[in-house]
Image 1: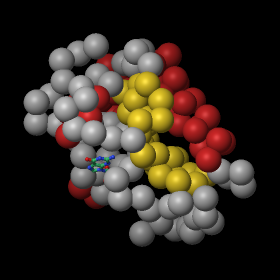
Image 2: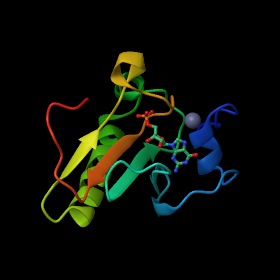
Image 3: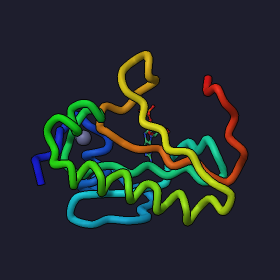
Image 4: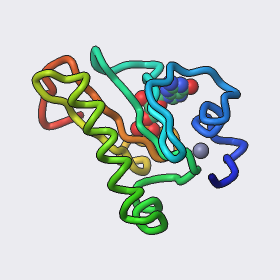
Length: 117
Ligand code: 5GP
Ligand code: ZN
């Protein structure tokens, strides 16, 4: 695993320096409960290696790693959302990204509206 970014809150969670409610961890991926849930179930699925966003991840990681991250997010969505779920990846300021460590939001447990805000 790459060294964590010392200024990154998710790297600190991955390193165990900041507590979080962990749902899943393997060699590459961590899934945690979002601290400020926007749905009855709101999970964040992230690579453990620090990478700022999906563009960088898809440019630098293997296709298998990109696929495994998305597959894990969908698996958690199926577990949490009997009637469906939503995966969201925010990128950049217009995308609404506030933490610059790639994470897939897995939202479930209520009906999602469209278009998003
Ligand atoms: P973004 O806005 O970057 O797409 O999403 C960042 C998400 O991280 C937000 O939903 C926010 O609630 C969550 N978050 C920020 N800080 C923490 C934290 O310290 N712990 C956890 N579990 N979630 C966090
Ligand atoms: Zn990080």
